[in-house]
Image (tube, rainbow, N blue to C red; front, side, top):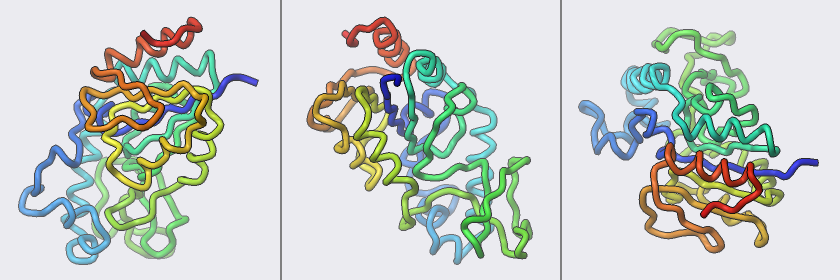
Length: 231
């Protein structure tokens, strides 16, 4: 059985591929607050604005490309059992070649029924519009977790964290809960690192490596594949 490595990624790794984080968009998107275009209440009040917001985000995702960090993490699968737990809604990990990705906040390149959340559809175009309906005749919405909605696959992700011998958290502020609490599920003996340009706090037992994901992550991966701890 191969050694298990868990990768936990936040907006910082995608930002290095040119994708702006929600926090970086400022208090308003055009004339709307972020909460108005990324919440159930916003959807009820103005679904067209919500769809337009995510259409813009989806176009940006489709134009983005995996960076060196995504590619290095995918290559890690040659040596370890790798599980990527991501807070990001893009598909850059998958396009880089990672085969086991858990999206706790959903996926922007999918839509789901507003009548039955189990009805999920891959999107073949960047646009999702009013009048696009599921097989039940209900309006489709982005298959992402909005403010106030339940985060997905937390139990599954926690089990992977608890079983891993190596954990690498990348580009996350660890401020969005409950996903941020996953780092505390790691076993005491696991080798644990947090990679980010800066960190207000570092979880207990984790070593902080200051730097951008695209430059630091390939180094960490190289050390692990050579049987060394990152310097």
